[in-house]
Length: 165
Length: 165
Figure (cartoon, rainbow over the protein chains, first blue to last red):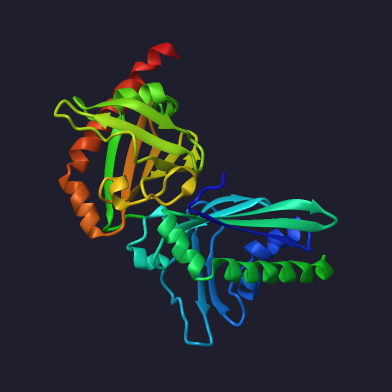
């Protein structure tokens, strides 16, 4: 369901669904694509089950650093189909201590995969916000460019796994 | 895991686990026990799967009325074992529009059942808050008395189902 509080990004990735899922859910691979280059993801702490921790530390050449706090929470995991997580809750489903802990605005992300034929995968990411103001804030922070770059990187990492199959 | 931000309530209920679960997850039964008498639960809208709506309207003889808004979200459902829901997210896992929408403070509840032998069930409810201040607010609102009364009512409703087995 599209909603005016959502931001939506879609990409056709040149890798089959099982490899995109692998790239999406393996810490070592997440480090390679989670942050839009030249930003980096030096730390990944994820537990892909409902209530599991979802924390990815991002750093940038300009001194940008999301730090070691601000853990989110995994909400739903359907292998090779859907991954849902939120910054509104922390590990174990506990509400986060403050809005600052979720980067100024809480949101829930639904990342889904669909077979697109010919060994390709349709990747869709939906960021659901509390209201239009938060959606606008996220959009102005560069959601489409940032998440788009990351999606391209996700596709590259997934494609690179083909040789190892 | 106990946490200083949690409120915990335990009750030994005189009914087997499958009947307590039935009383816990059936809208018609929820209406009978969800609100501490003389408060009532005239409307129940629940969908017991991850991301499902969790909205129970409570009214009281003093004009108290939680209204028709403020829907929470079901997070985890393990039949006859565990039900987890939160007021920090709405249906579909979307973060709630404002703190007011979750009664002044968001929290996540874990309601769990355990066989206690002799046809009895140990019921445990944990309310997890953002911080100690929210926990205190919830405690002063009468958490232990209110949730305790509801737990007793839950036990009564579950016990009343024995005859129908």
